[in-house]
Length: 86
Image 1 (spheres, rainbow, N blue to C red):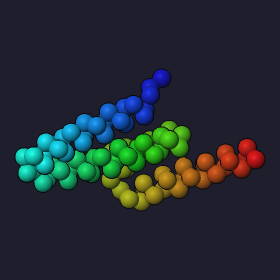
Image 2 (image 1 turned 180 degrees about the horizontal axis):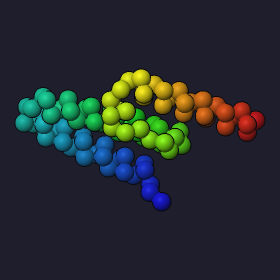
Image 3 (image 1 turned 60 degrees about the vertical axis):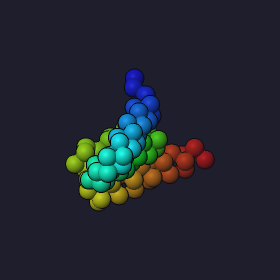
């Protein structure tokens, strides 16, 4: 079984270091790319923390509507579990 939080943390760490290298080289396009991918990794981390294992593809993460649907579904799923446990 994979530990997704460790993988996401490693990706965030690598993206942060790449961003620092791009800042040092004054390459703004690279910095913005690192920010974009860092945001996608953060979305994946949030989905995984909500136990949403039907993870979206990279193309799905590029679409705001799909991300909104994923968060709404994950939130409704967590509410369902909360109501069942009460």
